Amino acid sequence: VADTTCPRETELLDVISAGRTPDGELANHLDACSGCNDLFTVAAAILDDRNAAIHEANIPPSGAIWWRMQMRAYYDAQRTASRTATVVQAVVLLGALLVAGAILGRQTLVTAFTAITRIPLAPWSIPLAVAIALLAIVTPAVLWVAMADGKAERRGQKAEGASL
Amino acid sequence: MTSSNVMSSFVTMSETVFSSAATADEVDASLRMDEDAFRAFYERTARPVWAYLMRLTGDPHTADDLLQEAYYRFYRAAANHESESHRRNSLFRIATNLARDLGRHKRRHPEGEMPADAADRHVHGSQLENRTDLKRAMAHLKPEQQELLWLAYGQGFSHDEIAGVIGVKRGDVKTLLYRTRQKLAGLLRKGGWTRG
Image (cartoon, rainbow over all chains, first blue to last red; front, side):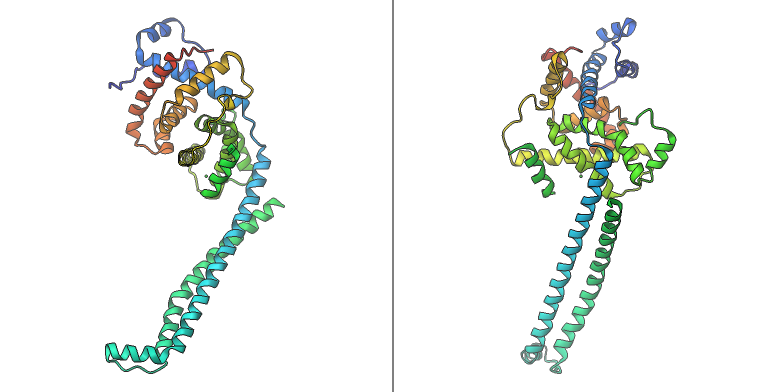
């Protein structure tokens, strides 16, 4: 399919955009040039439709939109904060359960570990290792979540302040 | 299911052309995007964005909902835009993605067709006939083709801007536009469209 554009398209678009109908030499060109004919048909139809749609658009006032956005931002920030708190609680609870399990089952764990690796371990070494590993993993994660939470909260406060 | 129900389920599932009257001061202020700047930007752009969404979705109520969602996502993105036109393009990109997401959602969850005149409230006579012709003809095009034509001829976007908004290569816009225009012109002539 040839997709060459006619050099008179810009001129034609200017005429259509101004709401005028091509006349004189441009009208003659329109009859002879299929590309410009297509352009006129399509651009005129779309522009008419757009102008009618813009005229009938019943958009809410900008103040109402701004207020709704602030309220929604505030509730979104609250929801985010509550979700992150739940995640932190779940992680801490899981960590506590792991440490408790390691403490309660320390004798069995040490025996199994020694049987497999033939490395002797002190009875408290496994609970201690689990606690240290959890601290190393969970602390940065909790700090990150808390910081993200704070950021969301600040955003919410800002939104709340703006909406009052 | 009503269109507002579709919209609310869609939202839970998942974001003016420059007014020639806009002064340089207004444009500079809008780059900062505080309340006044946002409101000025909204006043300049809301009607063209609504018209665009109305044509893409075919339903004024859905366009109302998507318009608000688009501005909210635009605001929450809090992006730094280098110019007013960049900001406007960003808004149109969000609106385009929202309309596409809704279209995909509707294809996955089909429902009853909208009344034929739902998009043509307050319009009568030959203007209504022409708009119905255009609506019918546009319905034969893919959503991406509708976006392309509307941005080019309804909004007067450049090829670069269209490429940015609909996510195609700049070099492809010219060819796509030519072919799509040819197709729509054929459909409109077949339907007997004449400028009212």
